[in-house]
Image (cartoon, rainbow, N blue to C red; front, top):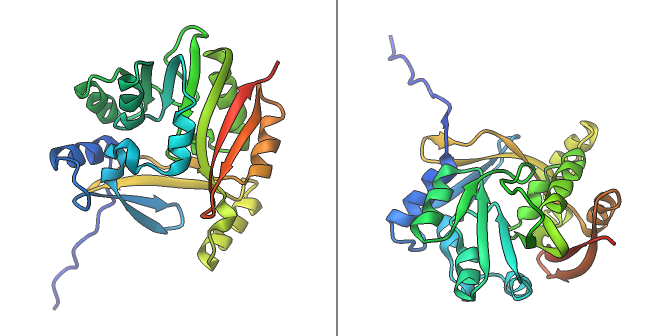
Length: 253
């Protein structure tokens, strides 16, 4: 009679993202030591070097460097992670604040003397309309979540925005991701009444995993359509050949 097979347990749900960042920090932020695993709801997984969350300005994608040069006034970074964008802007003399849903991310920002608070893209810890620049870099335009959620989220961004404020954000066109596994996922989303590039993902770190959450990749025509009923308009686009892009949004008159 053979041995009973080992039972495979699902990962515990916890602050996996904060755990991931702390692992990188404790490894002195050196590349190739800690990898972020992103698991999609259909089981498809991807991995990237988590040291990118601590990358220096010169190592950032060109579109991020160009966009960040336009930051001014009081800056709010939504989904700030370890605070790399804010640290750069703080060194330029700007007033900065980060928001992240991960307690570990907020703690790491504070260790680097970058102010940050717990919050989400659709529930910001800000009481007044005093933000001049909102950042959603690192493809964090994806925090719009989906068609319905984007309206709530963009109205929330407008609530905290000062007159003349702008959003500096990056994303990617999901239709540049080829392969049957991706096109099948897009089709399944459409059949479920979701946007094709509306990912349901979670982040893994060791035995930990975040809860699943929606993260939106969308084409520029889809973005323009989503913005119509919101307080924002598309002012400027920076495209690259890999499917990624940057945008500047401004408040409508």
